[in-house]
Amino acid sequence: MKEYIDRLKEEHTLTREGFETLLSRRDADTHAYALEQAVKIRQQIYGRDIYIRGLVEVSSYCKNNCYYCGIRSGNKKASRYRLTPDEILDCCREGYQLGFRTFVLQGGEDAWYTDEILTAVIQDIKKDFPDCAVTLSLGERSKESYRRLYAAGADRYLLRHETATEEHYRKLHPPNLSLTDRKTCLKDLKEAGYQVGAGFMVGSPGQTYAHLAEDLLFLRKLSPHMVGIGPFLSHQDTPFAHEPNGDLDLTLFLLALIRLMLPKVLLPSTTALGTLHPEGRKLGILAGCNVVMPNLSPSGVREKYLLYDNKIATGLEAAESIDLLKKQMEEIGYKIVCARGDYPAS
Image (cartoon, one colour):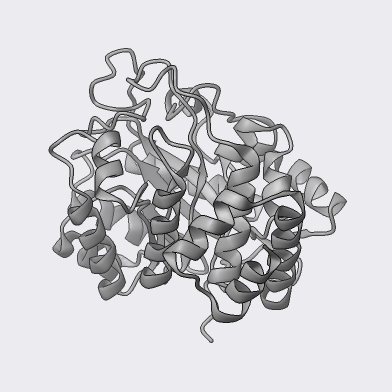
């Protein structure tokens, strides 16, 4: 199977059948070879630098009722909160002192955050921290909204597509949500000028290798600047409460394939990986990732932003533990850098 890895490394894509074959027939040697090649590519482009993003989870309110998500609107047991603009700025202020130069404002689709409120927040962050990047991850909005937020100074937008297959999308989402709309939003974001991120869950209910192959082909066509993937993790108050969690090794293998397919991509080693396995974040780096996103949210709300059960928000996941994270990265030969960590221009 190594010839498939070599072809992906050289041509940056495979056919749908090629991806399916690679995923379904992978063995230990293929897995190790893919990760080895992914690390080589990452080091050629980024060296041993690991970029940090300060994650600010702004709201656990969400109008959507996605079947896999712990903050879905239908979950009446969820603890809801919403950060004020001043609280968001306080998080960024703390993060700046800790060395963060990118802030990620993430939340459910909360209508309280109008364009006017978000525009003011973005402008204030840019005014106080002009050397920093602002990433938004606030779901589907109108084309006009995306353009207004970009004009205010937002640099990046992360909008995971979750699955690129209509039939599978329908299994994961209620009827009022549309895969076509989600893909249109990603197109609108690229046209607006953002550095754009997409991504998907690994091991979500009903997922097949054919679905994963379609995800990879979609990412190749979209050519995003960032890709966020992580294992599906169940939440006790969702319809998928008793579904098995995603597979660690498959997630790591897919991270490596994405690095080979999109060599310059900004690729986070996610909190979900760290939740699934104690060494998950480290393993992600060793699979080709080059971004980590410690949590800058106020400590009093971190346990309320529960997209899945047992989500970790302390220790290495906490921004205030940045020294521990630096030490962990140094142990495997990498270094945390104090930089915006933009997508390479050329």
